[in-house]
Image 1 (cartoon, rainbow, N blue to C red):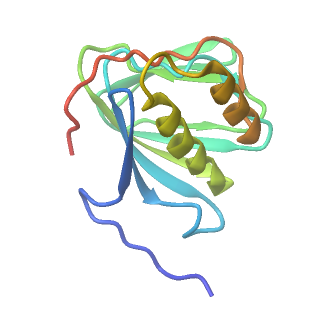
Image 2 (image 1 turned 135 degrees about the vertical axis):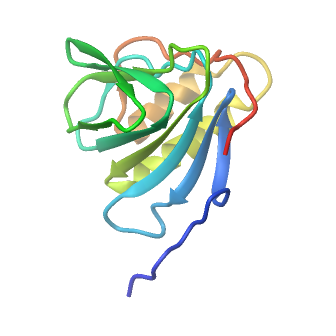
Length: 160
C-alpha cells in the first residue's frame, strides 16, 4: 500500500549540478506515477537540446524565467507559467537571465529523478566531467542528448 508523503519548504534531499540546486520533493521510491523536484537554476544553466522516448516532463516556474526550446519553437516562460513536454519532443531549457530561477519539475515515469542524483555525483568529481560516464547515464535514463550540455553555470547561493 502506498504511503502519503509530505515535504515542507526547505525539506527534501538535494544535489548540486554545478551551481544549480535540485531538491527532491517526491522521489521515485515514494510514488508510482511521477516524481517532483524543486530547482534553483543558476544564471547560465542550460540543458542543451535533448529528447526522451518514454519520459514526459512538466515545469512550473515559481520565480524568474526559463527559456524553452520545444522542437523549433523558442519562448520564455516567466513566473506562473506551466510547460508540458510529451515523450519524443526534442527540448531544452535554460536560465539566460542574470538572476536565479526557481521552478518545479514533475517527471513521469518517476525514475528520472535518479538521473539527476547520479549526474550530480559525476559532476562533483574533480576535473572535467567524465563524458563517457555522462553518455552511459543518458542511455540508462532515456535521454538522447542532441546538443552540448552546459555544466559551467555561475555558482550562486541557493534561494529557498
